[in-house]
Length: 230
Picture (cartoon, rainbow, N blue to C red):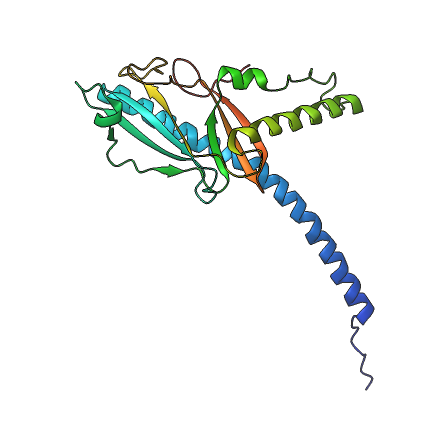
């Protein structure tokens, strides 16, 4: 009886397969990192809008003033910006000493390396001007691509200055508020407050003392939802 020897891989073939596998894994890591960078601000935007909606809903349903409190501490990378909702009981006027936390609504952290800050008018005017949109969005010219890369680099540099010192150390923590009146509308002028409700926010993702991704978040001046330009 003749027995056929079973085919087997040679050492060279095994090494070749392993090499191809390593190349594929190395390539996928870059894709996953890029994907994570783009997903981070999007997930943070959903969390932010959920808290804005909750603050607005509480104000309107309970007929009281409410506010979303946002604390950003760049040295706390693990939690990112921490958000909570407070309200001012009927008949009270002092947010500093008389505001209360909304019952059964715990604080929410945006998550690792994700922060929200407000942008003032001066902040907005200091940002670089966006170049014109490519004539063909699917096939931009080299010059158009260069213009948008330079614009993005300029924005990232400007935003870095909002959260880091020139030496790269985190700036002191910042707390700001988004207020809603008892009708559920954004309250732009709040009596007794040093600052007014911001109408433009920015979500930033940081890494290695750099801002790596961002998303501008303008608020509808009435509802406090994200303002979308058609």
